[in-house]
Image (tube, rainbow, N blue to C red; front, side):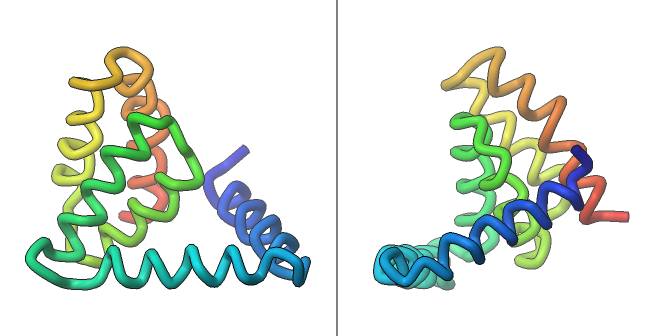
Length: 114
């Protein structure tokens, strides 16, 4: 599946989940947490997003990578900064994280930076 298709699928699934009123409180709480966590502070939003890229790489969370790579680019991160941040995960997660950098991170970056 292409990255654009995955982005559309993630968006559809998120909307479908949000449409279940039972879970709106959870999603709202999570979104509010993210607003606080990623806002500019002692650590810049760009660096927070790069940290999120490293963590998402370590966890091999493709939807997380799609989201945080885009946000890192919007916050001013370069392709090189994103890849180096993702490579930090390899120090903790080894080969699986490196495979995520090679197979996923680069592809997502190329989709957003053309």
